[in-house]
Image 1 (spheres, rainbow, N blue to C red):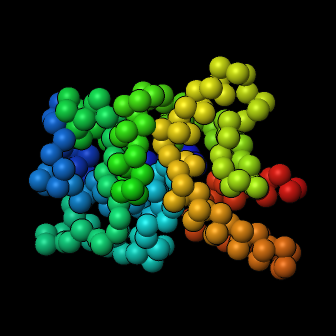
Image 2 (image 1 turned 30 degrees about the vertical axis):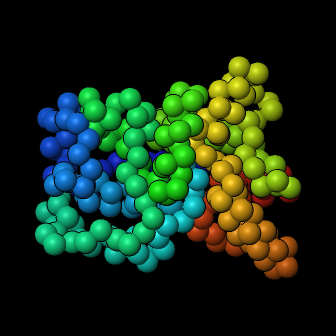
Image 3 (image 1 turned 120 degrees about the vertical axis):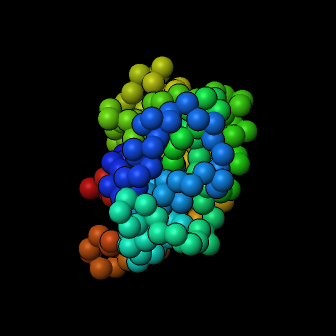
Length: 218
């Protein structure tokens, strides 16, 4: 799970609004800034699920999202893209009190969003793997098992840190069955291309897992 730069570059009207409406309950697509937030996140995340890095949009589709903003607001009558993505609250306990807090929002594959709610209720939430944290360092906290195609805590970290990372790997569904299967299929094909060509291919999804594999092979 890579580190995200979540600067607001397009949804300027939302940015102005939420700074003076921070104590507003989340009202999903009823909110006039719903698409603004979703599109800004998808642009910042390069069309990937914020947690699993599964691609939900192509780079071409992401580029097209930038064109629907006019004077800092999504153009009227713009439709929601037909992709399996949800607006997700990293800390769900903040959903009612500060439902539109930019720092707590991510665009997440809808299958993961549903599971994450269950796991968060069971295990709680920890910001150690929050992808927009300034101090989040994925290559220091995470390692990768290329045989299982599963993320694991970095064994170089103290036991306390490993335990926290392990919990959040579960909560954020980084190794959830469907995701793991798709990651395995995609990365094994890319690794084969790299081995045959001698060049590292440009990949669109699962960049952190791929980078960790390449790091291990170096």
